[in-house]
Length: 90
Image (cartoon, rainbow, N blue to C red; front, side, top):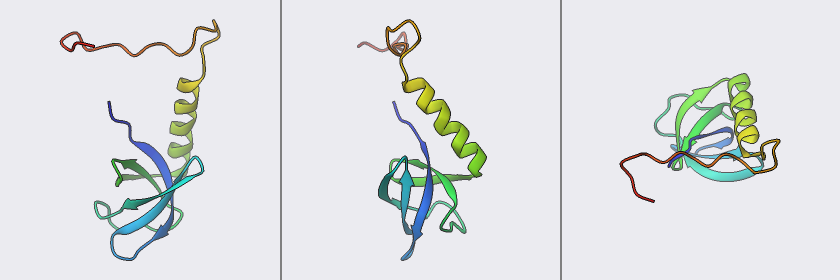
């Protein structure tokens, strides 16, 4: 399973390279798939590439949803196990 995560651009350049910050972790990323990416922009990062720009409200809402999904449920049994695709074996 793959997950694309919202991140804020903290440095752009040289060329198509940049540095992003998601939840306090700063990593290098490739910004070549998007036009006009600037420091302070929010982007969706997947496999080291910025694949979409989004506004700050969308980014924060998505991060909050991810945080909620990671929290244990109120019954104390932890997050729900992901459903497996019926045609795939464990």
